Image 1 (cartoon, rainbow, N blue to C red):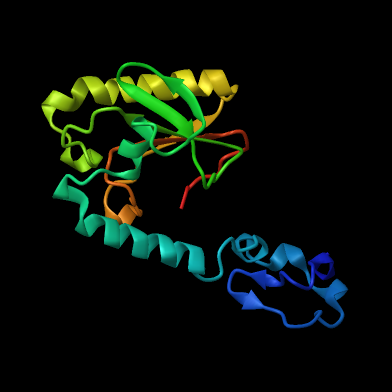
Image 2 (image 1 turned 135 degrees about the horizontal axis):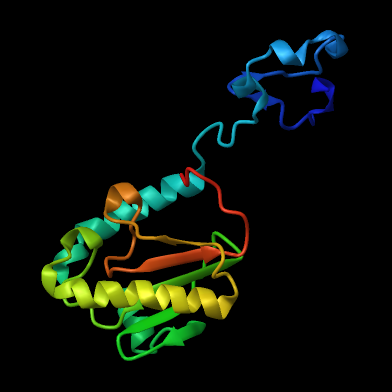
Length: 180
């Protein structure tokens, strides 16, 4: 059974077998710990996540300057986007770098100091609730209401790269836990 593992992914929980195991049919798989048999999802950090971290740290430095964000420009229709839902308070559009078959970004049309969830105040309660309700409407519209995830990245350690509060609605495939 162990010999059926493909040559390019021989990693098993930190153990790397550079070539096929000799006489692998003699290995008693029942005696191996289950954790050793599960393929490791990420063996090392990749360049993409490093770039996200750099972008998030750079964005955090200018977060509270009040400068227009890319989302402000999308709201003003200065930057094109594929809008899937819009009302007087929120705008929802397809993410340009989708992490799932359905990946929609939901944003408030007026920032009002709400650059990240950690800076929310009592006065933001209505728009926060409306954002979640809009996420549900988007999920219905996209046909994923029976299985979707809502993600809010808060701050540089969560890789928030746009300081205009936004929700990611992800679905269209089996989502895993823990998320990352």
